Image (cartoon, rainbow, N blue to C red; front, side, top):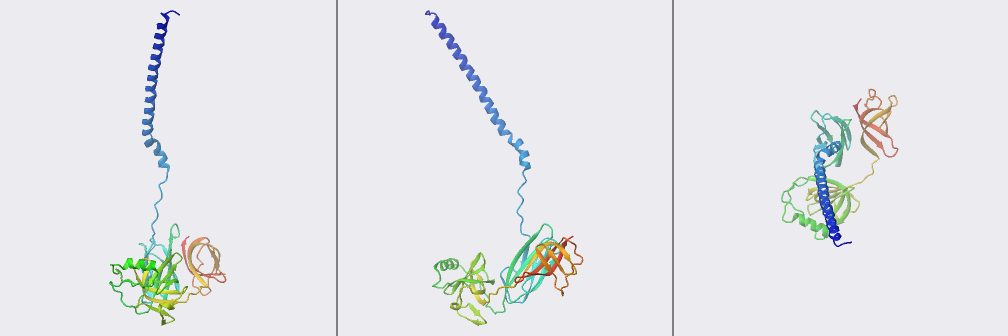
Amino acid sequence: MTSLAIPVIVLVTDKLMRKEIILAIILGIILGGVIIFGINLANRRPAADLAPALSMQSPAPPVPLPTLQITSPLNNSVSFQDSLTLTGKTLADAWIALIWEDSQTIIQADETGNWEQEINLVGGENIINITTSNGQDYQESTEITVIYTTAQLPTPTTQETASPSTDVNENLKQRIQEIVKDKTKTTTTLKGYAGVITKINDINLVINISPDKTLQITTNDTTTIVRLGKEIPPASLSIDEKVIIIGLLDTDEILSAKRIVTVKDTTPTTKRQTTIAPLSQLEVPNHAFTIGKFNVNIPKKSNIDVSEITENQIVMAIIETDLEDNTNTLLSLQPLLQ
């Protein structure tokens, strides 16, 4: 190879490298433009492309608010009269089944949903069960307790405060002191509860008022404690004893007791409940039929008329079950739908 050939080869090689570099730059510009265009297109498309998918998703249904309201009396209220007027509100024209200690009935709300019923009370604890339904897509139940007493209780004052025992459990003592420190009681409404004693700390105690709730009770020198009609000292109370307590709430968990009455905790032999279901297997001559899961009979002296009720008609019924022989007796009946 001559000396002239070397520069020629270098020149050709240099030109080829320049063309490759230029081509690489052009390809890079094109590729970058494609990428930028794709990104911009992707950013613009969701508003249009995702709209159909979003429109196919059903919005979350709103959480229904409770419709059944008991306006009077309040739960755990205390009555000094042997009767009261139960009032409430539900759906317009809905039916309401009421069960109280010694009776039951089925009534209908007016066109605004208001209703009321006069009921009698028994001494001590009164549990009132309320169920309402329109026979279609609405059914709701609640329960309230009213304590009836004939005892003469001193009128509560707004300056009354709790007086914890010096020997009370330290945790309870600390909680009570936090409540009453630099604070007077702001309510004078008596509240009543029934429950079983689970703990006793000197003159203070804890009761179970429901399977998942306890109430701490504080007493003082003015608290009256009665068993079998006679006053007893706090030390005479015992674990697992059922009591009815009337007093003033310091918090939702602590009550300053005015009166404590021990009561006999008996085992019920019957159970009354409301059911809403189709009536079937109707045998009018035999006064027997089925309401939902209950095989029911009508007492011979009952004035309940089922002659105009059709097979599979939705009804509201109050049924009493004998817990010993498991028989079901119909106490009240109201047809809801044809």
